[in-house]
Image (cartoon, rainbow, N blue to C red):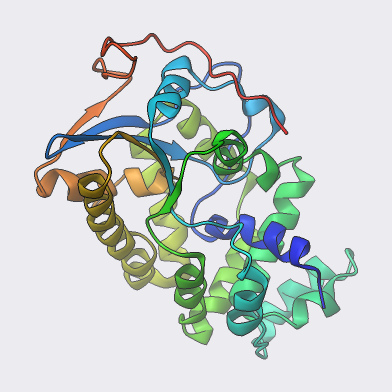
Amino acid sequence: MASTSRWKKLLGALALVFSNVAIAAPSITPLFFQVDYQGKTAWVLGSFHVGKADFYPLPTQIDQAFKHASALVLEADVQDPHMSLWVQQYGMHPLKADIETQKMLDDYCQPLAICQQLAQFSPWLQSVQISMLRLASMGLSPQFGVEQQLLNLKGNKPLLQLETAKGQLQMLAAFDETTQWAMVRDSIQAPATDIQALVTAWQRGDRHTIAKLTQEQLQAQGGEVMLDKMLWQRNRQMAQRLQQLLQQQPKPLFVAVGSAHLAGAHNLLDYLQQAGAQVRNCWQTSCDISADGSALLPEKMNITPQ
């Protein structure tokens, strides 16, 4: 049985099933918003879950928002000590692939000598593993994902969740066999050009391109049903959870969620606005981030990779 450490690394890239990766750039302006709701504030950063050391530093106003926040809010805590048990519960149910998919799998896994390893996993978990291997070959790692870097810096800040890691695994395991094998095929076939296009979109905070590429990927895997379950329903639920957290916390929150949740139809920010929140794009309108309430210029965030 694999070690707990191995499972943590594996699930650290869980969201890659529906959200691609970013390659570093000298200067970036990722999606970054201020949300004001019933007198409370949250700063919301569009993240990528894997990366490289030279993603960093991030802009100064992101750094300052993080410093002034009372708590860090993530989609889920991938460092949960129960992660390996949940992986075994929801991800260790192998199924027989159709002829086309098995041929594709064999062509991919035999040169890497990992066919036996993949065969013990549920198809959805095979897709995650394959995505991780492809990303690793590009020099990308969960170690340098935005969430992990924020966790490295959070100190005594409480860690709050919009979802749970267990709930995310349950959702993936609930997809039917056909959809799970489509996820496997997509993880093998995803064009490098699409990855690079998403890289550029993340660097520029290009919501339109992020939404377009994400929608195309999810529709290829499972049509509008996949879009609804992986994005739209979760966006609505995360917005409701964030409203609750804002009502409970006396001071501002710093929120990091996958960039796809902030782009396209039925995104997280839309649901917050429908509930009465005011949303500001911090690259277009001054956001009240510094200690005295004045706006900060987008310089650099002093994150030292661990």
